[in-house]
Amino acid sequence: DVKVTQSSRYLVKRTGEKVFLECVQDMDHENMFWYRQDPGLGLRLIYFSYDVKMKEKGDIPEGYSVSREKKERFSLILESASTNQTSMYLCASSSLTVPGYGYTFGSGTRLTVV
Amino acid sequence: SQQGEEDPQALSIQEGENATMNCSYKTSINNLQWYRQNSGRGLVHLILIRSNEREKHSGRLRVTLDTSKKSSSLLITASRAADTASYFCATDSATGFQKLVFGTGTRLLVSP
Image (cartoon, rainbow over all chains, first blue to last red; front, side, top):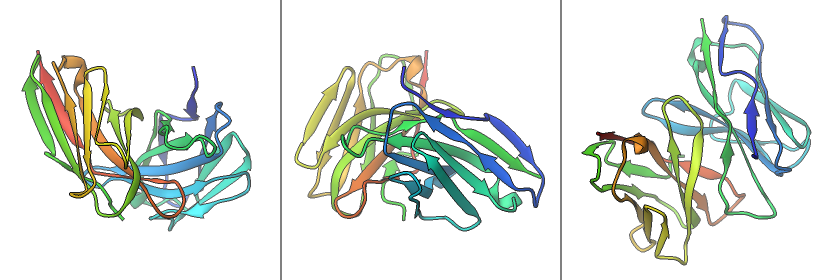
């Protein structure tokens, strides 16, 4: 069964900490995405990547960075966590060569910053 | 840049009834997709309809697309309690890189 795996389901971090959210996919997908989901706001795109070492800003990149050193792994980094980054974070992947077949999502990481 | 807007925001029905959710969007698209999210989990892809298609079926799901009105509907027939979830439409812009923009979702509650 193909999968997108996010390393943690729940995380609690302190304000100012550097936070790493890891995402790994086993489908050899070129595209990977990080979204955050907040009540009433739906899913908002933070960053995406269409190739190793490539990254593009989404709609709300401020306060975040990403790393894609290997095709299967896409990491989201909160350089200095703040309480307004408390949210559900969703990683997804999709195929560039076979577009339009939908995204595969991970189960999400619910991050609380205190 | 919120593209899709679902309507209604919440829907409550009995098992066996049909559920209809609507989605409106703003710009030209390559395709429109529907996803389901069970509480606190990731999203699951349900169905994709391309901009040159008007209707598509998958099991108990029926999706329509009207590009002139920039709208889509998702019909779930003979609903079951297990269909209780949030449903999101997502659009893939006709210009630029392939990335989906999601709506805010419809919360569906199916009671036994």
